Length: 252
Length: 374
View 1: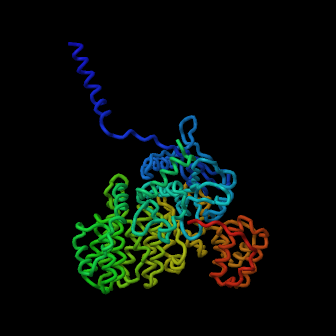
View 2: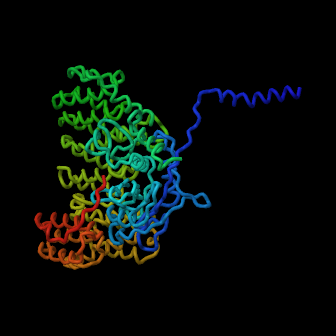
View 3: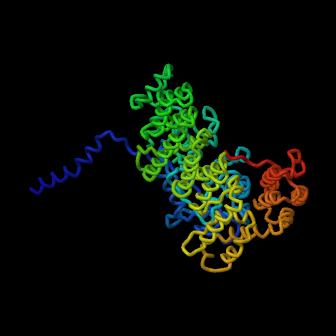
């Protein structure tokens, strides 16, 4: 009786596993890891700290930065290939946040920092690492005329740098304010620029730069950005997948 | 949401047969009457055809196009093209209907915004693209209903600043109110309503001029001084305009904010000190020339503001130009990073204010070109 009970019990335990093994559900793809280096850009004042809302540089807290990275990973299926954006971790498994002081952040009046100076002083100033996705959390780096949220740039056709992203705290010149906005997908939008290695799309995209006429995708010019990237043969998703799988830089 | 959009995108270019173009207006309108029976490509073609083939004010065409704009089950390309077509054939009699449709979009965004991430069928992004398309058009044809139009822009500005947080819509809607060809008093009223609702927003451009007259200054003073009460958010927006215009009335309150303790910890001391400086440097106005000429704060936009303000206050263009050229003497290398950044800004401000003419570019030391951001 006991043996019978054991047999029944064993069958009950193993049957679902056996059945599962026979089903055609595909094995889970391993995630391709994209190493990320996080930089937090402060003004050259000596008193700026993470999360300080009066900073002239980045005003985000460590938790807010983590929210952006987590959201990027949660939505990474949009890239059409299983990827994981993995920042460097310290012994306590927290993200390593590399603090850098930018002498080009104005210390008087508007804190708007010219992108040219930011790139010259920060990125080309020795604060860039090869073979990782360099993400700079900044205060208000933006050209005149609009309040940019962030950008993904390749200053490097002459310099040899790879693309990198800078992302503002979105407080602009509104004193003491900071806006964490995950729902408009601006961070994912910038990561798409990075993975596509494109600043602008060129033909057949429209003159505004990003999106095929009549369609929606994550590279839509203005937020909120839909979580969608064209897929299929020759599509942007395929381009991203091929780059990640084949080009070696971000091989698992 | 992701699947829906990507699949729609894949299908869209494939599903356009060569003969998908409607043959006549009647056929196109028929498609719009029964949008559930047509493909996205057919609907896009139909709304475009209706826009091209209809006479301005065609009531049936406008009714069907507005129905497409409102329909939250239709994909974004159909709704945005319907908007463009409707604006193309809009007449005065239908302006208010279009604005009502757009007010419906506002409600749709509010309804769908919070669960847009979780809900795959959310029409949030399609509704947002309609707003975006409208802001690209900013149709002057809706002018027969200026109050409806301006109130829509006001509501979009306030919602974007306080709730939606898209970043671009609030400032754009605010500027659009300032630039409409309607009575100054009407525009000023709507601008002040936005200012009152959004204490952190600091306007620029045409709006500042509209908010610099006596009536607006009086309202802004009330906003700022009221905001200093305990528990209120300091109204930096009002303070920034009053400071630009040199309003000495608020100077004691600003100084008190810096000197006294309670609010200092939560106040943005840097910005308040900047406001105090802006007011002080205008009294007398010639102090602006001293600052322009100096080497202080070389990478700050304060010098661009000071140059503009000096011209607004009527200082002679020659004096301003001499001060600017004296400041520029320090730059001897075209590769100087600060000069690369500041030269185009100062040159543009000088030309805009008549301090330099369009051929005076050569008077400023040369600088290398910076990078551009797409």
